[in-house]
Length: 582
Image 1 (cartoon, helix red, strand yellow):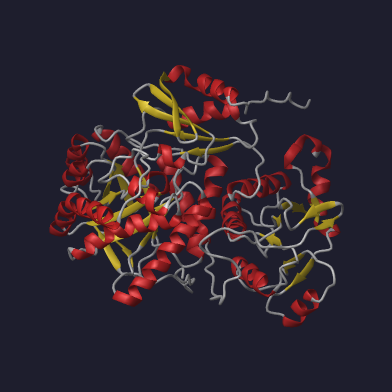
Image 2 (cartoon, one colour):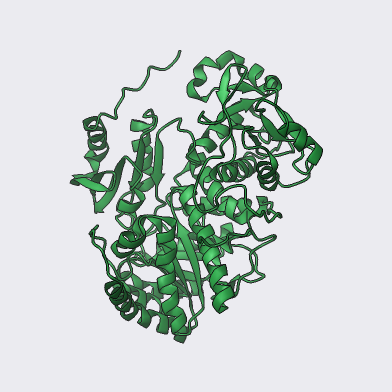
């Protein structure tokens, strides 16, 4: 049987893990952190960027340590920061190099290791492991990992066991597949080794660029930890949340809010990092606003009105609303008020795919409070399917209210989702985060056949927000989809400039997914569901991928965007951009 997932009213109780001056978990607030984009060997740049992050409200700062040489320079960075009076906890980010981890652990308050590549190199080998062979692999990992655990114990520093969907080991891939279960088991292998050595000062993360995968992996992790805690005790470790390679601009903020916000709303998460392909200081206000905007769910559903571990869209029946089909297998539709339609009337044709589709006042939608048993019974007795939503007068949180509605409403009735029951918010970032968290979370639960944005009053912005949430949640595609990692010291080209150039050349390719990766750490895996990939291979050189297969190597960066366009054309995915409407 699969483990039980229970949402936790308030926040999931966890043990406290000390990281320098800052404690994570327990009764502490949700901590906000970020990662430097500067070269780790450039001490002055790292210090400047760290001070800027701390000034912006960052509580924990991560720095990549790709080599032993980089790890050694963390001593200089720490010393220079202390000279300024800054003692913010530093985290060394480690991939591939156990020796770099051992060096870094001498100078920082926390070490992040990736179970997928700490003791393994990715070869994409396909083989069957016998139980004895698998046990031997665990012994090999123990031999590589134990020295770091022991050093962390000696120095009283913490660790993050951070699984990435894009970099699971061949061993995990062959036994569990590229799945949330594989992500969880990968982390638990390392956690068991740490526990065997008496070390408990660690947190978990389950990052993915796809919010659905990320949400499912964290839910499965928490369910497994709760199960182990009941059986063995002492498995209540804190959780670090993040959507990796979220991208930039509104899209990056929306995708982050869907993944991080939905889990925070369920009481999961003790520290967060919003990963944007922008200067790192821009991540902090978004993370702060996201934490402040969360309304935690309060209801424990038994059974849940959806499968928390895998995505299945709620099985409503198809109906037509003012000539537009929705429900069942139809697209999730965008609803707008009559007022919005009138304000946009002069430019509806120019909106293309971003037009509203249904007028709220003409939709015949039935509004009920899901706790009103008479209203629910009356709706369920209808001989034909009805479009149903939660009434604005409902005093439940949005996610809680729509989950309750889905649990009591006959499945044949399609559901219209709302972002808020209090229309007309004044701050656009806040409106974006609330709408993305509430509607995006429910869409990832499989709930919802149409969406209505009420919090953002500007007509154009509200429509753009609705369409971008549908795209980020993976339920409807309106434009090119980009998976773009945040910059860090491993990055081999300017990610912001490169992402802008690629978008300028390809933004008209509706339905094409392009991954833009600064280095190879997460490249092949995070590109598993991308159509094409642009990956830093060496300084000034780029490798191009089709799916997760590299096909073009060592292309000069000055030519790489044009070569990417050529590759898209070779695979018959290119269309010429439409002429602008004058």
